[in-house]
Length: 199
Image 1 (cartoon, rainbow, N blue to C red):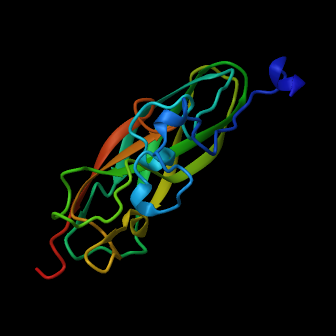
Image 2: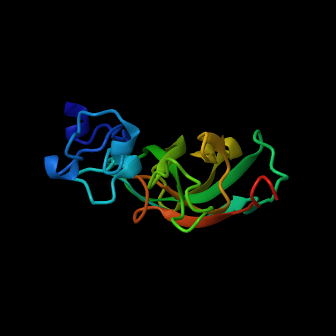
Image 3: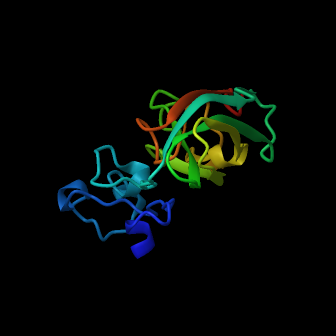
């Protein structure tokens, strides 16, 4: 701890939980584990700004992200393979500061207007779906491309009367950054061009 405070070690840890501003940001029955109480609970459902967000972290270095791309950028109706992956690539630049690690995080969110009415039983505001810890040198301006694979099955949500896990038709928002989801990270769209299963 002394080495971190004195600058001998460049910290790269990230918060594994959400630090709320107070009990007013939690559901009234915040001890309940029922999923119908989920809105407002954890980083997956919180719509307000917490004191410290899930994935937050500090560093003595300045790093920037650019050129976020998805490959493929869409998945065709009925032709997706659950074991297939979407590769999210981003350029990470170490602008200044000492060498150290960086935790590149990938978050996913299904847009509110996606799917059919009543499709999604549980529709999180955002979810961490992948991360990669990379090393950054102390050379100013050094760049590297970081790729995180997002399995298609990680996009599945509980849907329908029987709460079957399935890919919901619509557009997914993808955020990649070093300190949690937007507004800190880069954003891209992943279009799920899917038709209802019975079509």
